[in-house]
Image (tube, rainbow, N blue to C red; front, side, top):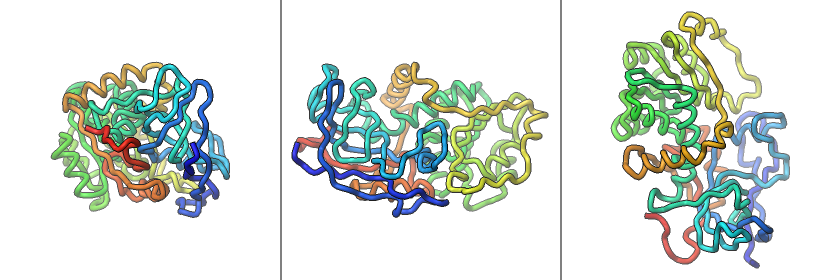
Length: 345
C-alpha cells in the first residue's frame, strides 16, 4: 500500500503528570505483513491507565517504552491483507498493535469481533482487557458471596463498572466511588449499583461508607488507592478480600507518600489483600469472553464508551484518564468503515 500511515511516538519521559510534549505524531509507510501476520486498518484504539507505568524508565509488569518507540495498545480494526489462513480481508479483529492508522497484528494473538453482539468499541472495554480484568479480579480474587457488600473505587471506569455489575449478578450489595454526579447516577440508575459516593463532593469517606455500607465491607475492588482506600480499610469485615487492580491516584507521583500505616487494620478482620494481573489468566480468556458476551447479548451487562474522534486526539484521550474525562471505557476512533459500510449494529 502506498498510503501514508500516521503513527504516535513516545518522545519524552514525563516527570509527574504526562503532557502533550511526551508524544509526537509522525508519518511513515504502511507496514507489510509477514507470514502469520495481519495488516489491519485500525478503527478504534484503546487508552488505558496502566500505560502511565510504561512511561517510566524502570522495570514493572509491563515492559517500559523506550524513548523513540511507537506507542502500543489494544485496537479493533478491519483486516486489509492477511498472511494467515485464520483470517481474510474484511474480517474485523481485535488485538495489540501500534497507535497508528494501519498496524500489523500477529494472527495468533488476534481475536475475531462480532458486531452483532456489541458495537466495536466494546471489544476494547467490557469485551476486552478491562472486562476480563473485572471478571477474574472479582470472581477469582474477590470471591463474592450472595448477600455480601462489595465496594468498588473508580467504579465508573471500564473495569469498575463491569465489576459492580458482575457483583450484582452474584447477589451482592454494591457501592461505587466515582467523581461526578453524572457518573454516580449512571452507576445507580443504569447499572444497578445499590449506592454510589461522589468522592469530589465529600472527603468524609468513612462517614459516607457508614451510611451506604452499614454492615461493613466484605470485598473491596481497588482501582484508585489513596484516601478512598484508606477509608475502606477501616470498614473491612472479618474474612474480607481486597483485590488491588490499580492505583491511579499515585500513577503520576514521583514519590509515593506513605501517610499513616494501614496494615494494622488488616489484622483484626484477618483480611486478605491480593494484587492481580489479568495476564495471569490468559489460558482462561476464552471462557471469560464467552461469559461476558453472553451477559452483554442478554442485556444483563451494560457498558458505555467515551469516544474521542481522530488519531490526532489520542494523547488527549490518554491524558483525560487522569482528570476523569471518561465515563466507561475511553477509546479513540481512528477511522470509519474502510469500504463505506457500517459494521456496527
